[in-house]
Structures are given as structure tokens and as C-alpha cells.
Length: 423
Image 1: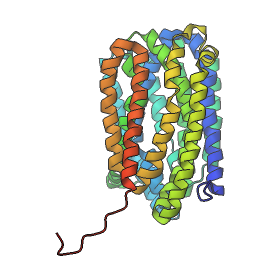
Image 2 (image 1 turned 120 degrees about the vertical axis):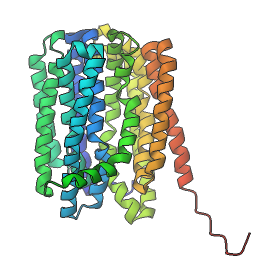
Image 3 (image 1 turned 45 degrees about the vertical axis):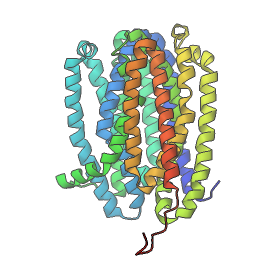
Image 4 (image 1 turned 60 degrees about the horizontal axis):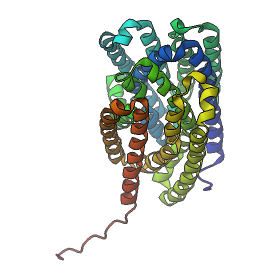
């Protein structure tokens, strides 16, 4: 393992991120059996659809700042004024984007029947997702100082989960799920913003500062928007084709699979700033670090996929209950995601983005979104939830194929310039 890759600072940040993400994904593993039994497949399906739509709104508010902001903060680690300008610009931009997302939610309430029937659930889900989008983790990831903010986040998430268990008692209480979790997320976001302001001055940057932040985050927003179309909105899209009960079966399997996949997140978040700095300051060292990062990510991804897919017959009844038998084959398919996505993360976040190859990365993901849309139209009417699971996995495999080709192309040695006068 490259020593530059896992320095003491990276190891500290990795421990902090692992702690935060273990809680982030352990808590849903605790709440999933409770909610599956308390709400039932139908109410849980409606909740899943509302949360999936709300996460699309969060995507707009976040606007790729988790990547563009972290990358820029890593470059400005020693520039306090520059960090303050970055933090202020992104904060102002998020205010504008939150207003735009609220207008989209109002439109969805009028156009989508299930949201029109349950507006309280829809707006509670919006508040939960918006609060998550306001998290300042990107700032601390960039400056590689994650211990304090992750501790605060863990404590508040545990408190929110405790409230969920105390308040949710039946299908009619579905809105309380995002309400309790959203309250904890909002408190965490405010605490994180206060902690960030202690590292960098938070001032009104003017509309020009917000515009600069939006322009810098634009390319990463394209990536996040396109990838989320086929990664986080599956339950919402599936609800356009099948009954809520079948959405519930799919949502149960997807949440287990995504919980396993989420264990990759601490690795790429801890390592991304380091790869960004190495790509600029020490290209040869970055090559060795990339190989180490690939082995680490792939080994972890394969272990997670084997556990999820092979263990599906035991995980589903344990976590969801006996009523979710149709979720077993869905988890077998979706369980393949961690292995495939570990490679996609490595190629995209550790190689292409640190080298400024945003366009190639974004075009790949945009193409994947179009492919996924075509696969949904073709497979879901024929295969229902299983067709949706297949569409998601095939799309990620297509992304892997293209990113591998771009990676190989980017490593080609430059051709020597032809001497003048030769034809």
C-alpha cells in the first residue's frame, strides 16, 4: 500500500468517515425491520417514492458541491481567505437552490396523485432531504479534518432514530419517519456550518460569489444528476409502472444493497482529496497510489457483493420480515452493485476527476442515464421490480466499460511532435 495514500491524516479521516457511515447505514438496518413491519409494504412503498423524489430535490440543492467543493477546498487548504470565499459562495448558492427545489416539490404535489393525497409526507420528505443537502461535510473532507463534525453528526442521527422508534406506530405515521430524521439532519447541518465558519470566515459573497460556486459545481452536478437518475430514483420511477406494494418489495431490497454499497463511501471520501493533490503535485506518486486505491476499493466491493447476494435469503427475512419474500431475488441482483461501483468510483474519482477530465466523466454518466431510461421502458413493463434491478446493474456495467476505455486512452503516451517541414 502506498504510504502517501494512507498517511496518518488520511487514516484519521478514514476512521471518522467509517464511524459516521457505519452509523448512517447501521441505523437504517435497525429501522428497516421496524418500518417494514409497522408500515407494511403499501405504506412503505409510498414513503419510498416520496423519499426518492425528495432525494432528487436534494441533488439539486447539493449541486455537486460534495465533489467540486471538496476538490477546491483541498487545493486551498492553507488559504483561509480563499476557503472563506468558497464556503460563503456555496452557502449562498444553496439558499437559491433550496427555493428552486421547493417550487419543484410544489409542482410534484399537484401532478403526482399519491403526493397530492399525502402532502404532509411529501413535504416532510423534502425537509429531510434538503437538510441532508445542507451538510458541510464537503468542507471538512477538503481540508481533511473530519473528526469533530462526524462526531456531532453521529450523535444527532442516533437521537433522530430514537425519536422514530418512539413516535412511529402505524401506516398513518409514515410522515414521521422523514420528519424525525430530517430534524436530526437539520441540526447536524447547522452545527456543521457553525464549525466550518470557525475555520473560514463566512460572509455575504454577493450574487457573483454564488454564481462562481454554481459554475464551479456545474460539471459535478451533471454527474450527480445523471447518476442519481438510475441510482437513487429507481423506487420513484418504478412507482409509475407498478402498484405501491411492489415498490415496497423493491425498496426493501434496494435499501439493503445500497447499505452495503454505502460502506464504500468512507474510502472514496477520505482518499479523494489526497488523489486531487497528488495529481497536481506528484504525478508519479499518484500512479502508485492509484494502483493501491484500486486494490483497496475492489477488494472491499467484492466482499460486500458476495455478502449481499449470497446472503439474500437470510438478510431479507431478518431485516424486512417474512412478508418480503419477493425481495430475495431482487437483492441477489442488486447485491452485485458494490463490486461494480467500487471500480467505477476508483476510475472516476481517483483518476479522471483529479486530472480535470470532467467532460469525459460527465458524458459517460449522461450516456448511462439515457441507457437506463431505455432499459426501464423496455424491462420494467415486462419484468416489474426485477426488470428495474436488472436495468440498474446493466447500466453500471456499461459505465464500467466506458470508464475503462477512457482510463486506457488517458494513459497513452503523447505522440512526439512532428518536425517542421516533414509531411
